[in-house]
Structure formats: C-alpha cells, structure tokens
Amino acid sequence: MNFSELGLSPRTLEAITAAGYTTPTPIQAEAIPPALQRRDVMGLAQTGSGKTAAFVLPMLSLLEKGRARARMPRTLILEPTRELADQVREAFETLGCKHNLSVALLIGGVAFEPQALKIDRGADVVIATPGRLLDHFERGKLLLTGIDMLVIDEADRMLDMGFIPDIERICKLLPFTRQTMFFSATMPPEIQRLTTAFLHNPVRVEVSRPSSTAETITQMLVKVPHEAKAKREALRQLLRTQTNVKNGIIFANRKTTVALLEKSLSVHGFSVGALHGDMDQSARLKTLQAFRNNEITYLIASDVAARGLDIPEVSHVFNFDVPTHAEDYVHRIGRTGRAGREGQAFTMISKEEGKYWKGIEALIKKEIPYFELSAEAEAAIETRGAEPDRPRREGREGRGGGDRRGRDRDRRPREVKDHGERAAMEPAPRTERPPREERPAPAPKPAAAAPSAPRPEKPPRERTRDRAPRPDRHPQRDVSDAPDHRGFTEQTMPAFLSRSVKA
Image 1 (cartoon, helix red, strand yellow):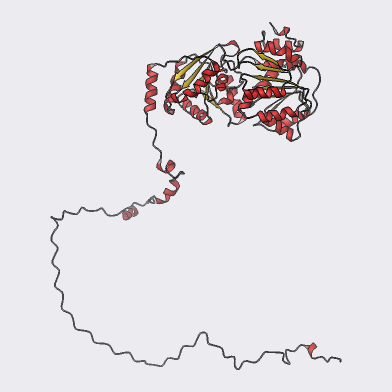
Image 2 (cartoon, one colour):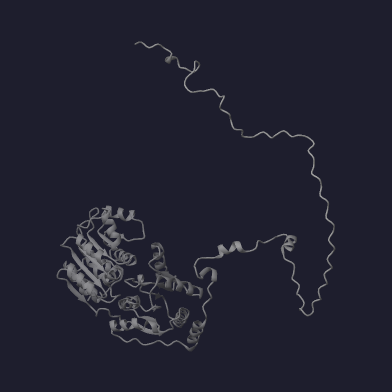
C-alpha cells in the first residue's frame, strides 16, 4: 500500500513525495482513511510507529478549504511537553510545504506577546501545551468556538503529568460537533474513561498490543551495585564496552541525578549534554539541536525526553535508573529502533530496584537477558564501590548547618607584619622544671628584726588666718519682702477698666 490509496489530496501527496516518504506505517494506513471521513479516532500504537504523521496528513488535506479568522483557530493539537509541541510544528513545516497554512506554537518558557500576535493575525493550526493554552484563553486572546478538529497526542503522558483536569476543561470549551483524535502508546483506565466521555463512536485503531516494545530493539539487563559511586563507575564501564554508539540517551529518574551524571561523565572525557524540566526553554532547544547534529554523543535526560521525541539516529538507550512506572520503560527504549531501524537498550538494575523491574516484565510480557561485563570492568566497579566517602567538613556540613567560617574568622589571631612586634608578642619559651628530688633545698628565712620605737605624734597645725565662710551656691530666697503682684496696679491696669460706665 502507498499513500495514494489513502484518499489524501494531490497537494498533500506532492508534499509527501518531496519529504521522501514512500510507504505508510500500519498506524498511518488504518488511521488516515477514517480521519478523512471526519470520524473520531482512537489510535493505539507503540512509540516510534509514526503517530504524528497519522494526524498531520489528514489535517493538511482537510484544511485546504476555508480560512482562519482572528483569534479563532480551526484545529487544535495538545501535547504534554514543549519538545513534543515543537516537534509537531516541524512536522507541519516539512509535510505542509505545499500548503499556505499559519501555525501557532503556544508553549511555556518563551515570550507571551509574540504568540498572542500570531493568534490575532489568524492561525489555521494551534499546537499548544494545556497550561499555556488556558493562559491565552483566560486573557481573552484566544477563542475556541471555531475548532473543527481536536488532537490529543500522548494521552497517557498527559495523565502522568496531571493534565487531565485541564484536558477536561478544554474539551468543554470546544464545540460539540468537533472531530476528536486520541493517540497514545498505552491505555490506562483513566484514559479509557476520558475517551468514553469525549469521543463519539470512535474508530479504534490498534496496530500492536498496548505497552509492547518494538522487535527491532535488543534489550539487555546489567547488574550493578546500589552504591552511587559504584553505579556511576558501572555506567562508564558499560559505555566503554559499546563501540558502535552513534547517539545515545541516558535516562535517570531525578533531575539531581541528571546533573550529577553530566558532571561525572564530562570529567571522564565523554561528550555529554543534559536535558530536564528545570532548564530554560532556549537551553533545552539548544541541547536537543546539538544532539541531533551529532555535536553531543550522549544526552542525559529525565523522562521529559522519554515521550515522542523523534531523533532517528539514536542507536542506544541506557537506563541508569529503573523507571518507577512500567509504562515509562516502553517510552524510554522507544527512542531507539524507530521506523524499522535497529537499536539497543541497556537497563542498569540493582537489588533494591528489582521490585520495579517485576512490574515492567509483567507489562511487556517478555523476559530480558543479562549482559555480562568483563572481569576488568567488574574489578573496577568493586574498587570504586569500596572507596570511602570524603569526610564532611565539620564547620560547613556539621551539626547546626551553615558555614561556620564567618563566625570562626574573628577568633583567629591577627597577623603581625613587624617581626620585632611579633617577637614581643610571642610568649617566652617554657623551661622544664627538674624533678622534686633534684631541686635545691630552700634557703632558711632570715630572723625577724626587733620592733622599732614608736614615732612621736605631731601637734596639730594652727590656723594662721580666719577664712570667710564659703557662700552657698543655691541660697534659699526670702520672699517676705517681695512686692505683691496680685491684681492690677496703677501702672499695669488696662485703660478700658478705668473708663466710666453708664448706668
């Protein structure tokens, strides 16, 4: 089967030929015909099977008629992460090269005003994350009453990231007569409830068993110790054994582990870059572009890169930590072995992580063999794990917390530059006392002298002149002879009181 048999428009077929696509994937062959018939579609397929083109191609054919109005887009595509949204925008630029369509990308981490300006001019397609879409709507910059087609991509990832309440709110704001398409690699019960509520008589397209892994991926397990130093050494030894790595992604569960692995591997000479949710959007896009251009060999990432990223040249995937959710394992290793290519996936597992791996085996229903490291590598791992940790600095990380250097600085002796003053300040050296037996006997005390005769008393001095008494500084004032100021006198009486009064 080729694309000409799916019912796509001639302009879309011309764009497909220009992009180099020849044969549709199973999910594309089964999802495109009902989508062109304006029916709701629920697509279930493993990651890397071409779900993006399964909704982009019919959307391009349906958007050839009509024109977008200001603040009223015609189609809406919801993505869980910024990277996935930007990847769908690139797919529209590639497959829609023959169409004059306006595409608006509404994601966080970038300026708000340029996005609002693009919506004001009229956008045929809006690709957005749920949070930023609601921000535009609440500010009155976006109207959702003209949406004809809604696409929810990676619906299970929406569930994991807590976007389901936002999805329900957005669906209630859209017209009832819209066309809805769901695409996901797994189908948890919560997603099934959502599809029942918002899809009307959907066509279920399931080209592979849900939560299954591609047959082109070689999966291996690597036993490692639980200690952090030994586990990082095991990762370095594992990377050195793989000589055919073109591009590889190293997944970790925590953002702090991502930063620590980037620093550790770069110190040991590996070409690495980091990608996690706390990074700025420009830094994330720059790192991804460097990884696509083979400027970085290993990309250390959290689960933000586990869903939907289409980097065809990824040859290896390394799970430094076993994912706590079994579905995340399917998405992680799905970054390799895409579009029929071969890939290899290694999962480092310790004894403490065995409980998580049991859930993964129950999900994929496959037993994964173990990969044995060389004897030299095992010895290096054991040696690294036996090294003691560095002692903590008592002032900096001791009890009480904080840095004590500032408080201890005043207790240090002041440095004296003058050597003479230094010598004067230094105490004299102590001399050792001889033992008690060798000490000389104390000299006898001299006899007490006889008491001398008492001195005669001196007669008192006579006063040669009479001194006047010292005047009192604060004498008590006698007010007996002071004039009485009560009432008015002839000099102080006002003139109006001396006037005659008529009876």
